[in-house]
Length: 326
Image (cartoon, rainbow, N blue to C red; front, side, top):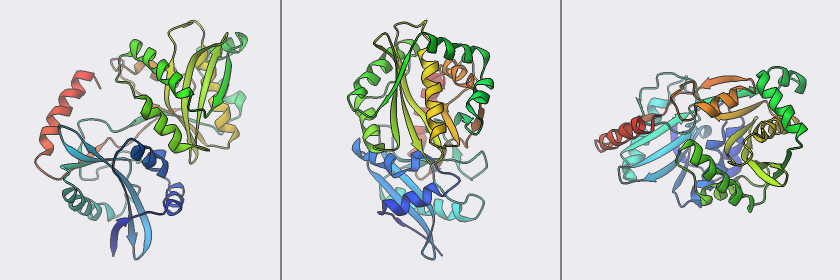
């Protein structure tokens, strides 16, 4: 009845994904193109029932010293309420063995439920996000913000902070530089220039923008925003160590929110969020929550174990998680 086979038709893939309640950019064709640009192997598979497409999953092969495995962020995109996933897991075990992988890590865009797999020792993309519904008018959105956030937006406007948007690849150097300054303050592992550039190219021309905040001719903040399905996603950003007293990032976010609303999108996804005061991203999480909205907790990453070699990777990642305070 069910059949798992490759999909090579971008139109077929995108139409299915965009019509799904689980739609997310991590399973988009563009995200796969980005990974290919970074020299990774990408497999786009479809689940067919009597010839009709009923599910998709985009697998990215990861080859590391600790293990060879597949990642499926934001997927599989299937009907999790039915009986399809036990069948799919058996098919994926065969697929993984054929490609020398010891496990497959998935993080479907669904809320927590028992799908019969082992919880991964490490997260896979943002598992808890902060989302702002965009249905209310601008005045109501402002009213629903934290008082301090609203004040800082107005302050940035009075100080004549300028917000612009671009798709110019030259801005990637600025984003990388600002990310480095942010790393100096927040102490996290940065992304490379090539990574940012690959993402920009993959989602051009319509699904990505770089929003830039300038004060007196100096760039103070820059954010990479993905527009996909019914949401805009605050995916990456960086901010300068200079003029920390100027609330440029607040006005930048407000302009992104207004831009997403004008496009008719339903929500603005601030991406990763934590309530843990000990987490290194607790400060940015407070910043995001100030704009109003609510928390969404997705099913944490799950591992489909294929071989005993998985357990060495489990030990390594468990240690890394504790060391990084994740």
